[in-house]
Amino acid sequence: MRRRVEADRCYWLLAQYQLFVNSGVVTSNNVACIFLLRKHLERASCWKSGFPTMRSRRINQFAPLLIALVGLPARGKSQLAHRLARHLNWNGESTKVFDCSEYRRRHMALYGSHDIFRADNQQGSAIRRQSAREAVQDAMLWLKDGNSVAIFDGTNITREQRRELSDYCLNDMGFRILFIECVCEDQELLERNIIEILHYSADYKNMSEEEAVDDLRKKLEHYMRQYEPIDAGLETISFVRVENMGETVTAHKVAGQKESGILGYLSGMRCLPQTLYFTRHGESEYNVLGRIGGDAALSPRGQLYARALADHFNSLPAREPYTVWTSELRRTKQTAADIRAPKRAVRALNELDAGICEGLTYEEMQERFPQEFAWRDQDKLHYRYPWGESYIDIMTRLRPVLSALEDEHNVIVVGHQAVLRCMLGYFLDAKLDELPYMNVPLHTIVKLTSYGYKYKVEMTKLPVECVDTHRKQPKNCSINRTSADALTTVPSHYDTLPSNLWQNSAEAQL
Image (tube, rainbow, N blue to C red):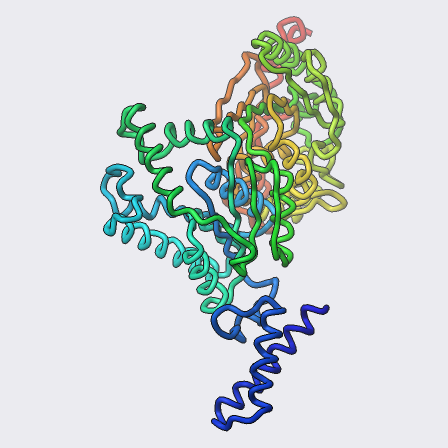
């Protein structure tokens, strides 16, 4: 409150000063006004070689936000930028990363050497400045188009660069800006970051390992000579400092709803190597019958998958212990029962609640609730079953689970189709409208291995037969469609296949 009063006083004094300038008359009152203006501006931390602009004062917390990364190479900036973008997109903030290095590569047919990063290399400096300018301009266009957050992934290592960027964003564009400085003093983390750059950076794909190591070392030396860490005593900017990939997080002048949420995410972030496993439960009795939801037990083939799954994980080298997460439903617990690892039943991993449609087949849904069935096909992401849930509801309840899982290693998640679609979509940064139609087949292990800010996907199909429950979106989603059109993509199940496909020879004779 006191700061707000100080600011209001500053702008009243500024108005008085402008009247003095326009009149051209010097009086004792004018001189006193100037003295008080400067005094109050200094107390309000608004004074910096001139007067504050009226435009910067009008920026509110709902304005688009530019996040600018700060720090030396190999400090985890890119990994933080993309993880943060994934988190914000999941939470409904349309976010995009603008990588300055990618813009720089557009101006260079082939990366030459570290010389481009020397402070006295005028041509290299011009290319880097132009690249940064283009990245920022595209970020501003992204925000002007109605999107929420843009992340500028650059070094921004000098105070002059940060001052210019802050002035442009606040005063010229009317957007909010938050700087995130990445600092890394942990030698083990630093070496791991350097190894990832050498393996995955496009700059070094045509160099030998020895050449790449030498070039990167000299590049870091050039940057270190120019680096000016953020100093709250010298810079009037909002910033968060992240040390050792989230070990310590400090904030300065962070205000606003988006910024506070970002600070909370960064405070719990640990960018460590990960291997995660996902699998649906074994084939259930409801899967065989084509029914959705419910709390059915495993079918005989589902029980075979449970044993095969346990054999698979129990036979892997025990370098690090596994942890198994299941839902609270029987079919996931039965599937994980024989895996030799600690188990945790998580309520948030329960399958999508189909409300009044629990336990029905798609054919029965079309017969009883044709309008609901059509509405769901029209917008499967947002559609909520009467007295049930939507995919958006699943995403909401999965937020704490995903936050916890981001910092885990060697976790086996035994879940359900809709839930695993959302979880895999999060880690693979899939578009939200793609989630409801991702193919997550039964009796298949999906392994995610992190590298940098991305994940490598490996799928292992265990040799146990099962039904196919994947249903594609039909082309005709009209409320007035025929039943045949509505059911055209419904997968086959027991009730719709010739009985001899499901019976053994003795049952067929009977």
